[in-house]
Length: 334
Ligand code: KG4
Ligand code: ZN
Image 1 (tube, rainbow, N blue to C red):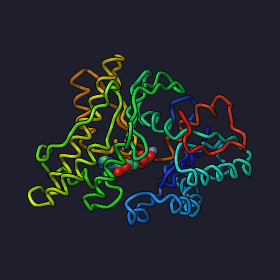
Image 2: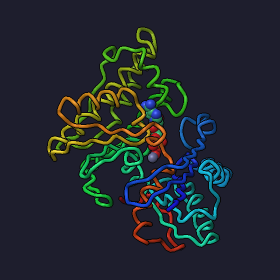
Image 3: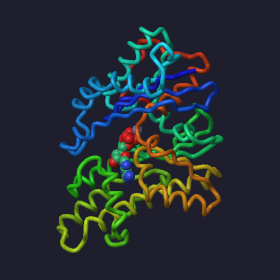
Image 4: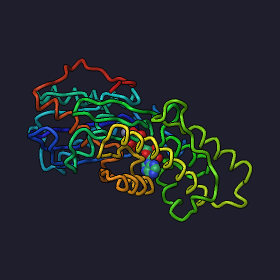
């Protein structure tokens, strides 16, 4: 079965074609992502209205390119999977309406997919992973720890109480005058910096050891910048110190959960999973305890439509479909 995946929940316009015959086993025939960084960088964050307008311009070209790269045409597609939440509602609507129009015109089934389920299952695009496994989803919009008990059975063990980890990276990058999105820039600067140079707090949430909190670290960096004004500390050292603190705060609950639930496999997904220090340290820490870290390639860590097609394919293979009245939901629960 050839599934066309469509993703437009935030600021990436993505389309992909996967081939699957069996739940959880898929070949990615193409995965196209058009990012809008050049637009949002001027504002230091995603501007929802501009994001939806760009999706409108980019969605059909992205789909056509995905079909071309997959060496197929509209008539070869058997089904469509599209993100219907959570995300920016204006952005979601563009992908969803496009999917509905195509499904109607092509006479194929369509299913709406939860974006988070896409991230949770992204590791399966490249690896064979047995359930249960633990999944740390870290992106610009989400930071949460899930127990994937089975496909379709997800238990949230912990979540951020305030900012998402990616949001903290982006906000700190903005404070440091580095541009948007900031995670990648901080990651690069940090490679030349000393992570012990600036003392920053590691927050823990009282009586909720598997929850996260990143608003304090952002404030600590702001205070540091105000008081030091770049005199003694280089940008590289501040980037490295900030990144180390975020990695520490992500590692502790993840490893605690792995121990508590006796889980051998930890998956790392979402845009922040691209962070080199996080991949390295979580991999080392997991190995030291006899566990395995599975991190998708960078192109499947950040928002993409292949993970949406895969998540949708489980229901499609069972013959399920959504009606064309299915709606976008900004806060769609998993
Ligand atoms: O999953 P994603 O593409 O979009 C959603 O938020 O759903 O994640 C984007 C986030 C941004 O906050 C970006 O700064 C962060 O991922 N990011 C990184 C790195 N690359 C992207 N954060 C830290 N280190 C990186 N190398
Ligand atoms: Zn995402």
